[in-house]
Image (cartoon, rainbow, N blue to C red):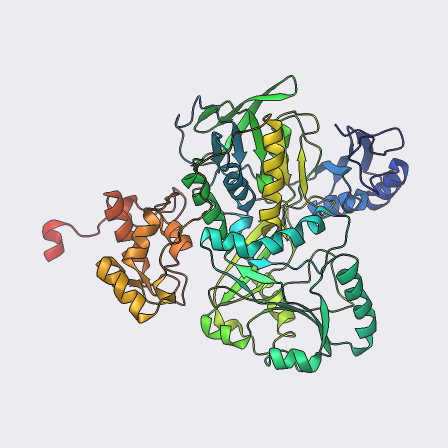
Length: 591
């Protein structure tokens, strides 16, 4: 267990260099930033901040002043914010006893990339695995609301868990995506510079990253070479940092594939299932209460994203705080995809907020361009509304990278909420006070990249915590993907249609999606019979018209599959009604 001595240093054998705090110095900084309204104390291995702030922004600034980057001595935010309207966690509409009394070996809380990848790795063993997710589908929050970049790690230095895992995770992507039947491309990344005078300085930076931090594919290329590779980039760029190992993947597609493979190997996934409480006795979780019954797990894995702090608190193991951060992305029509074929951003040496490069441009695996994200602190963990100023800010910046960009090409946009700690690093560790919990928390960028490697370490922790586990002799790492007609040759399509005529009935013209593919999605291991559930699995409605033509047909196919009326089909959440009922009936329809 981690603890602090009187001077604020970690005293266990797992302490890291730099894990030392001078609480008097921190209190001085906190008092200066807060005007004396906030107090800092050392408590149970944490820096706990209490007092009052006039705004959320002020509270975040104070917590940031108290935090040490990458430290395992975390800041816990107990600051009361005046007039802050805290929104309760959105709860599923369903209340039943579907899992009441179950006794899983492992309960995983959270159906994002972390929870799904951990479930799949643990399915290598003969274990009773239960993954619960409060949303009606997997990857509904940060894991499905990011740009899908598989990062190279050029902006990460040694000393953080992000750096420790990023190269491992990046190198695993080719094999993982082949096994799971998920499309993955190594498209390369360019960080572009206008300032010729900075080239020697940036060259030294790249050498450090390459030889000391082991980001081995890092190199400097000239402006001439950059423009040869990407002719539509700003002609004024003098040089760029190139990282060919950068890739792109569909983030929600990968999350779903991980979960489906876990289910194929014996795991159980329960959607619309929110954790509402825990019974903890003698430093162990005895039971976990949900809206669908109480379960009695041997161990719990906390992969709850922006709610991971709440789960830790339920387990009497809160030693960190999450401060949500919004990021908005825009998706452009596929015709804009011809402008560039990599990942790129401009680095303005005089402007940086320390959290992000300020968004970028990414050529997705589906052929679109994705622009963003920005980074905006927020107190609202589930507010994914998109603000026009976010789009304007990112476009204004990225037009400096590629002037041909146009807002007219936007076909949709989305906002996600990330889950950073104040130390801006991951938490991958066993509980400090609770003996049967593992935290996979503070996961933000590059969490998608690191997930395959993190899952392997959490798998080892879990098996050790269980006292060992027998291998699953039937474990199959291969998930066969749903056939994608748009990627097939004419001959391949003809053979498939001959076997099943449903593949010959095109439902979505923009993305060339057939009825057969939609029915495959509805028959998948984790079936989500909603319009958005089908959309995330096989892409009807992802094209230029955004479902304007195909959504009624998809709704009808789902209704027929469920053997229910059209009114029973939902877009995503229980309250997202598509059809209320017929407007004309019987004789009235003939008048």
